[in-house]
Image 1: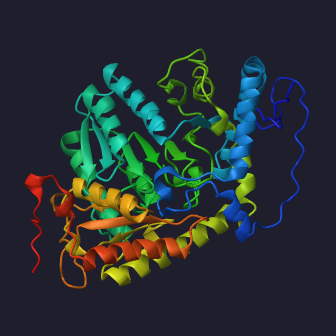
Image 2: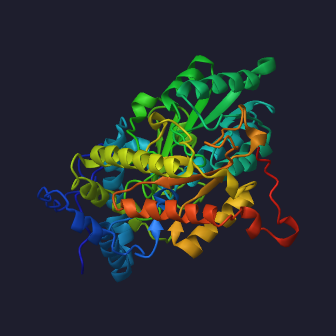
Image 3: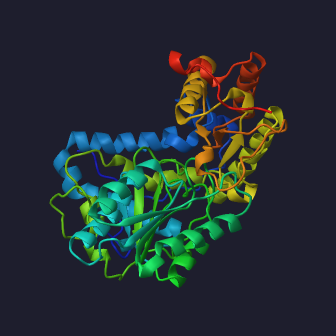
Length: 471
């Protein structure tokens, strides 16, 4: 029978706790990866598409996919051996790798889940129970950023608002000029949340917002929460690991989650939830899918939620091996991606007569770039239709953000013609991207402008007009 990959670690990182197991041979340090090898690793990408949207779904190199396939075959070859002998050691190995990656105090602080949305459900479920069981008073506040991820916003409504929480949003400015602007708005919203002596039970803070993409001064906001008596802080960092340095002890939140399939080269879907060891709430957190390990701690509950494919969660060490083939490892990848995304963003902004939506210091490996005002993007539906057209007609994959004036706290930003900018592309840069892909995006938009296109042309017949007033 095929053997299960070992080199397991236990909760304290020393063996699997189930007796001796054959050690996994250490890989020799590989030579630095070449440009040709990078192309080979991502040869499964559609070569016809300019894929400048790593942020939405991430990417996974062929070598990690091959490792995942080996685990999948082991499960299919002998499921009993996989579940009872291989699964938990494999998960512990990945959890130990994540703990070291984010400087967790102990591997027991790390639980592996499908994605950051699942991690949010775990935290918000506990908050809902606290309202339902009378630990929180009806009307106590939960604070979140206006630009919180849509699924997390809906989870807040489904769990805590329904249970009786008052939800207060922080109305962040965009475009944004400095971290101080975000800190000021956070202070103001926190004052609203605390008005009348109301207690703030939970603050949900993004590390990098999704749309628009902005790097948030998360450590400073966590410190403000501590100073102002906020009970618990949950950092939704879905995009962070692989884009920016992450030190969970330095950030100091009660809960921190990040996907590993977006920017850390793992296959979909795997994320982690970090909870600080020793906190009274730790034993009260439960996976929303209740299975046989219920009550044995969140890491165990999350590691056995029925028959499913766990392979993505087991190959985190293989993803780490992949990033270590690059000069500087993950730090080098982050640095080069940041430099390239700013370079490409500035190239697009110059071509379109616009600007970046945030300064480089507030960007990771994603950047927002204003689109020409004459495209008349006036709604989320317009943005989605133009995005679809770029995909289908130009083979360019890029998200488009509609910046609604209704949620602005400052005057609408304008382009070089003094026209208001309402549409933004969110470009990503990952190791597989090349300059020509961004040039294809540039040229596609320039072609639309030259042809006098407006997004109104894609609307239903009754809405085929442009309401944007241009001077």
